[in-house]
Image (cartoon, rainbow, N blue to C red):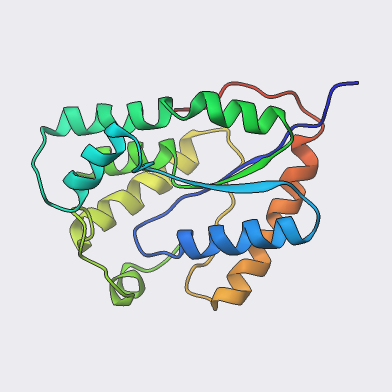
Length: 188
């Protein structure tokens, strides 16, 4: 009998929408409920590529736009073997940003942006400005229309706990569904 695989749960959205907070809360809740779950964040800033991206995002160096796009993609690719291994071992991965952020932010060069901008530390990184975030939000909406993936939109202006409860309920459904399907390719 094949072992049950883990689910890939990706939290996408504009900067300061609460993805990191909700990712940590979700992993904690899933583990407390007896699931094997881990949090991943992109960019993964501990690798050499990730360090270069971190420096770029923190406005410490400049890179050509096409190169930046390729570096973000390479940063995801270098994590694919680990992700597949974890998923095939039955670990649910909660991912703070993935390929759709790369598409949205590259195309752009449901939280209202005014709310996101009011949150702490908004504006410290390169794309944390109103114009970039607005373009990225529009690209996310386009991606949701153009893909067959199972998108769920969560109103990020609610309380942290209300958002958590909604994401947790949606995640439980995804975990149960994932157990019934073989692991496919990861979109990078």
